[in-house]
Image (cartoon, rainbow, N blue to C red; front, side, top):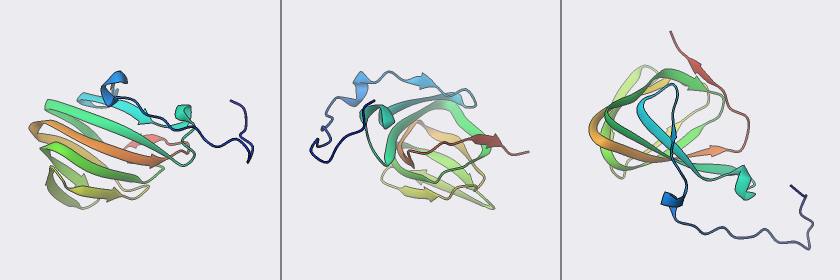
Length: 128
């Protein structure tokens, strides 16, 4: 990828979300993700991902090296956030700070949310 000069404005990106194929989340159960926008699109600061969890789906307790900002599109889930457990549904928003242990358990499928993260290296570490 060539560095952009001040004379070269960044190009806009417009496409249908469903044109991005879903990928199975290895650590998850009945969970897929799509990178809707990210470094491959020359997005300079953030990646936008869509997660979808089906019946019986979820993610085990884990931490990440980067913060997660999430917006729930549909469905419901029980989410562990550190020492707290919450139930979330459509139109709820979450900020999960870097390093905070968290997990997901689907209550009503499909559970689907947008997840925005900084375009920086991340690592998932299982807890326990």
